[in-house]
Length: 131
Image (cartoon, rainbow, N blue to C red; front, side):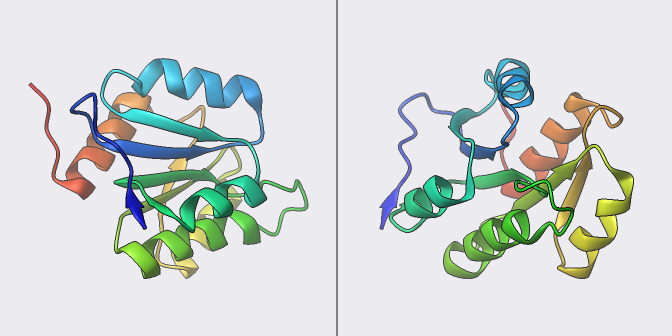
């Protein structure tokens, strides 16, 4: 296993969302605080995670669009269980919060909860505070 590089001095954040515009928006909004490792799908994310350890994971809960949330939950569970790192699920659908809570995962409501609050929650979860 390779710990993801912190060449920038910023913590590494694995960002998973199948929507390019959302993924790019988050990269722009939180890229100054975190070194972003972006992925759009479950298979490539799991392939990366099988050999690399980021500092934190932020994943869309519903990567397939079927409403089950299984892929997002599986990504976060893998990261927590194998690396002991914090993992956040996100969705624009408030009803998905119950899936996150049932699985003991943190939840971010896209488009409603502020990105600044998300950055603070992630920073607190990994014990990182930039100047």
